[in-house]
Image 1 (cartoon, rainbow over the protein chains, first blue to last red):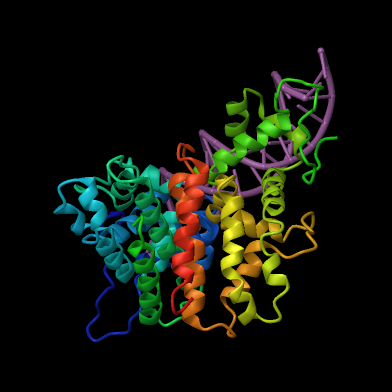
Image 2 (image 1 turned 60 degrees about the vertical axis):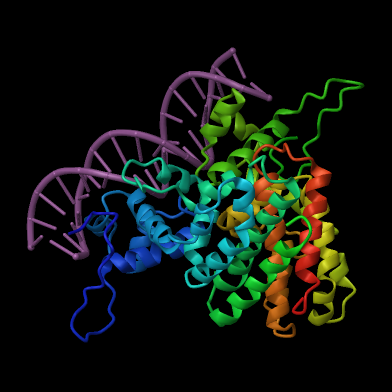
Length: 209
Length: 209
DNA sequence: GTCTATATTTCGATAGAC
DNA sequence: GTCTATCGAAATATAGAC
């Protein structure tokens, strides 16, 4: 069952078997790496195919369009960050939502350190991201992480000092991921997470926060 | 004297005259905006030309290649951040350089808030940046901001806690710029700078920092 | 300095054999 | 499920008139 961008990319679970990833999964792995390093537009299907040792046309068996590769990765990130924003849901207004920001970022760090490139993919490809949220095949019932975040960051109900702090705290997480999670994941993940969490807490503990 | 990417883009200083920007300057302005919003590869010369009300071919009078537009913007950022890293120069080793990091970021914030898109250009186009530093026409005698930064961030002489803090602090600056300096600069610049500086200081004042 | 017109290359995407 | 071959569109870049 190819060509469905929302497919969970089954790993062909052969018995007790070798962890050999499916072609579809390997496409997504390679694409994620290249999209992060060279950008979505800077990566051609030929680049991906060559890296995989197949031809361009083979990719079209698994994905109908190039966009669908990005869409599949986006949906994976969306799933990863699914419950990150729940602390915002119970809040009655933006002021209260900004109070919940430390809890949100704590959850965010936990998920993000496990899949740093999935976060960097979005940060470094705002154009492709914008195209995908407008896409009809991407009818996620709930709003996007970045959409809700951006709206809260621009809310007039929250003092500007605090909003800047919130943006800086979010940026601190991304900065940590870019430096230590992006390239080779040599840094121990739990250690990285702990230090980033701690830095974020310090940003949000201060007056304006 | 067109087609020199290192040219300072003279403003045609006509006497007491109207601050009408030169075409070359207007190309760079539009290109910067589009490169940040759509990405370098996602922006065609036709996009730039259309926005300027000229044709594609006209751009080639001012810039020999598309790369040269990016290169010119990169050199402008390089000039902007010229003296940001001087606190590192006096330090004898990486440990001492990490001690100078707060001073570096303080300088960095001052420059970056004035030209946020020049920073975002690099953050969002790592591919184009990599191509430009390998370019022979870009023989800046001194090393790049990001090169020196990345090297310090990976130095084994500095404890990992501190290095993560340093990366988070840098990310906090970028995060602040992305949220409040990137789109429309409605936020008062000195106010933004002050809050970001304060957040950075809090990240670097802590144990690991 | 800017134009029209065109050359050249690359890209996304399709058709059909195996 | 992957291949060869190819199409059409769009992009970079050039040539030469004005």
